[in-house]
Picture 1 (cartoon, rainbow, N blue to C red):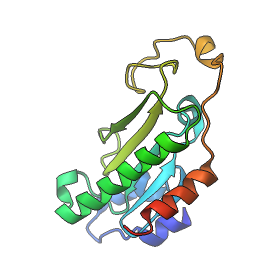
Picture 2: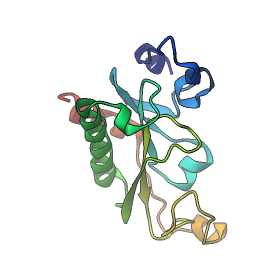
Picture 3: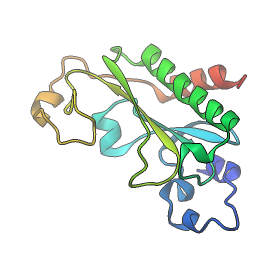
Picture 4: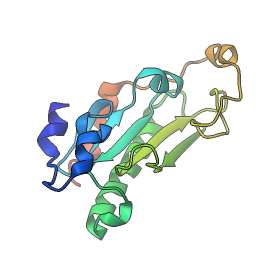
Length: 164
């Protein structure tokens, strides 16, 4: 969270920042950050249900992608694609699919969800925000629980994004 505060510079006129959870908190376990955006690993029930679930969050409070200039959008998407690529490379077993989503209906602050998915997860093939379509017991008895080490992901992100 300290790194987030270091990089986040709310504008004087940003009344939304006070009530925005992505302005007030890191949004998860911080894996990488620069002055423009940060990558966090989602924890809690969502993180346990969807191993490797990450968010790429714009540091400043911005509501829509088109509020960013072309260079900012390109930078943000290069980070999203780096996270997707590294999750594909480092999740074990390899995900069946990676979902990318930018909704912001509940949290109107530009951020992307990067979610590894497996055919035996509790919601597959539906979005993770839909009702589960498999019982928790079936999901809990996976033959191999997907894993990804945060330290490995943090190091890989640092290497991949050092030049961006």
